[in-house]
Image 1 (tube, rainbow, N blue to C red):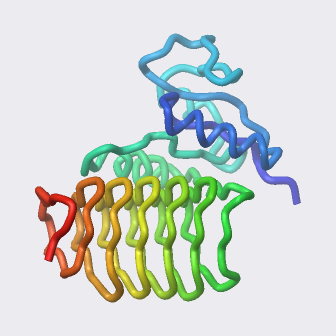
Image 2 (tube, rainbow, N blue to C red):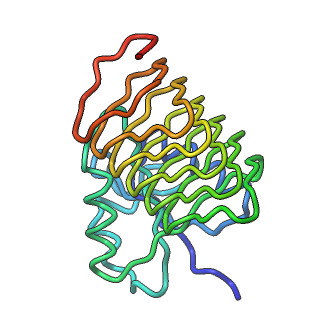
Length: 209
């Protein structure tokens, strides 16, 4: 059965990377919504439809959405966009780059984005609206909560749990069986050897005992 076409929410860098993946997968894309661009402008060859209200011109069963908002800090903006459109009955497409390696039993929630070069090993669960970014490695039995951003080059060893709406910064390593609480920022290049409590903004250097 042919899937409905896609509208991408946002036109920044993360959205452009998603567009390239969607093109590789031969997905039909109607256009982009972005309040910082005028309707009719082009981004990666696609037309800007207007701000996010342009989505409401389309019946929720006739389109799918892709959340094109990236994150560089802990924020609920991406989560709010997702939950708002879900409350209106719209569905979000998951975007999985064809170069990623994903074990057959991995559970992938609605709107999850798995970018180029990633590896996701058996027993892993990735909840809705999360990003597993370029060349990340998620080992066996990890649990990634909703609205999480695993930034480029992150390594999660086996059995790591990452709480809702957390951001694991680029190049970080979290050793096996560690728990990261919700709304937590792990700064780029960190090595995490212990559990990190909820709602902690970690001012971490290269190594954390």
